[in-house]
Image 1 (cartoon, rainbow, N blue to C red):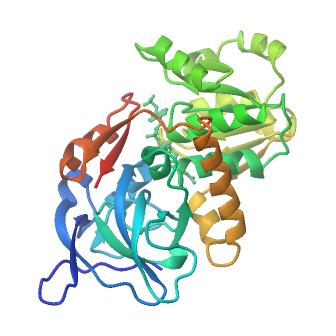
Image 2 (image 1 turned 180 degrees about the vertical axis):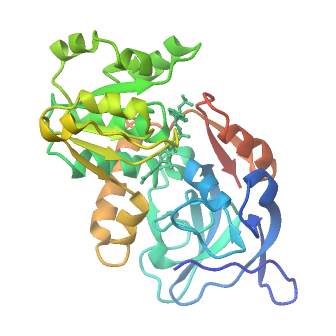
Length: 350
Ligand SMILES: NC(=O)c1ccc[n+]([C@@H]2O[C@H](COP(=O)([O-])OP(=O)(O)OC[C@H]3O[C@@H](n4cnc5c(N)ncnc54)[C@H](OP(=O)(O)O)[C@@H]3O)[C@@H](O)[C@H]2O)c1
């Protein structure tokens, strides 16, 4: 359950915390303010959490702007992801205890704050022997990548998948999880000056093929498919022309799953792809996926988080390069999180 927010009033607040609060929607740099926020003592089924670290993801920005599909009531604290340590629990809480690390399984909790009380059902324990940034960034992008690779086609070692925005947080997780399963990845990125170093970095993560948006349109693409099978699955994070080009390379009967729209352009589907290649099109939203399971079927969420944390522990799933900044330095972090081609996740350290 979303906890609601009371701004700090010393007379009835039990504990004080700091949080990045917005009272109206708008550009994050203009509407977010670091303020004192209330932290009540945890009720029977509640958990008091000291936040340790929280990333800034594109959906967090959209939520503050008021353009996201799910918007918490205002005033709200920003941030949907992060890791915290349990400092106190209500008397009926059974799934976590003091000292455990926890991550949110619900959107809109407001993770950009030093301390908060959340419902037990909105949290999940993660092991505390994995790196802090890995834990802080496990519950959105790696979970999305995990579901994209698991839920749409039955993939076997040697099969291939194709994706755009491959250097995004989700893209890098797709590369690494696919590599751990023996699945070949074809990875599209935007051209840039430092392309060779980006290609090397993605290859170091396990990317088999890295191509630019321009190369995707060239006839030489067919040479690639002499070396690897046509993809059964395409993951679309961009939209626009790039996505139509990517779709052309899908195998007969393959699926394209859209999970992001970074170019803010619609997806155009040639009718030939539908008629002659029988491609399937669908969308995925991790928030909805978790919402449908958070209260009834936590086993699937638990297994996913456990598998991902195992990969993190074994060094097979590393978070994207990041810049860690104290919460007070949120303005710089917000600015950098919206700078194109920077390719560094901004992590707020509490
Ligand atoms: N549906 C879901 O469940 C779900 C879950 C997680 C994330 N998402 C969405 O997935 C997207 C990526 O999230 P993230 O956290 O992985 O982001 P991120 O790490 O900040 O990466 C953003 C990516 O988008 C690319 N990009 C930005 N503008 C672009 C454009 N105009 N054309 C092509 N590529 C562009 C960037 O490439 P450059 O390096 O070239 O700038 C980068 O690869 C967001 O839209 C997010 O909301 C959806």
